[in-house]
Length: 164
Length: 164
DNA sequence: ACTGAAAGACACAGACT
DNA sequence: AGTCTGTGTCTTTCAGT
Image 1 (cartoon, rainbow over the protein chains, first blue to last red):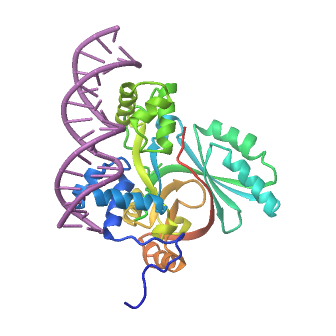
Image 2 (image 1 turned 30 degrees about the horizontal axis):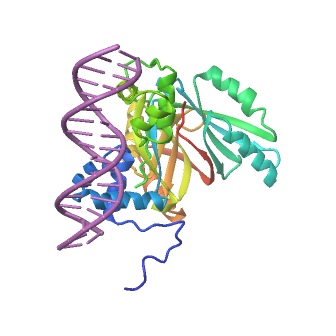
């Protein structure tokens, strides 16, 4: 053996074999699939499947089992991508901005990005009126807020969570 | 909405009472929560909880139960937001572009957007080298491709799927 | 719509190869 | 690392309120 395959930093990489990947692929598409069903599909008994899932949960490869809702049907049919820049870029100013964002249920995603803006936000709202209200009265009122630019999502072409 | 695959002809609004919402809130955070556990938390027996979940699955309010993986740990640590515009904007040209995008596992999200670009894509890759390869050899080679602009995600501030 | 009970299916642990 | 087997728990259905 030229080198040991298990010398990686434990927090950033985990060794996954073909069976682990097969399990993950099934789980990604259906978090409620039974261990029994997985074991039949990958031709194993339930015990090793169960153990592998437990191991991947504990190592953090499996982050969370979530339920996705239909945005339209729960009255969140409008998605807006929002770019914001801050006036001040100190560590403290950034932290305060992040705290505000974390408390806003309309903001479903927020990334620190490269380029002329500091953050990219994904906002969900019921309609244009409620988004406008959010934009002006909540986002626009955040301390230290610089420029805000909105891009409206007109159609969803693809949306997946499959990473492997 | 020239490229938006509007397929649903069913009702866009579904009546949900407080108990339905309570169930959805628990399921959104944990798709593997048991019916028994939900029934205890909202002070109901298992039967009505089970029936309500079934009803919301059938009406499409509940879209999918998915498992989220740790991107770093499955070697997909780089996220890039990518804006593309097409040279031609005919229906056929748009459809061909969409078909290409749907077949690329690196593209995890794609939206038709307002503004100077036509689409926004979210790309996951192992590192900058593999992203560069994707950008040049796959995305750049798509038929009818106009401008491409990449914005790199430097940090994840917030990521949730809670719509209600 | 809900409760309670009951059958069948499943998760999970143990003994073993 | 895997199979098999058993026990306790859960899902799911049904009768009754």
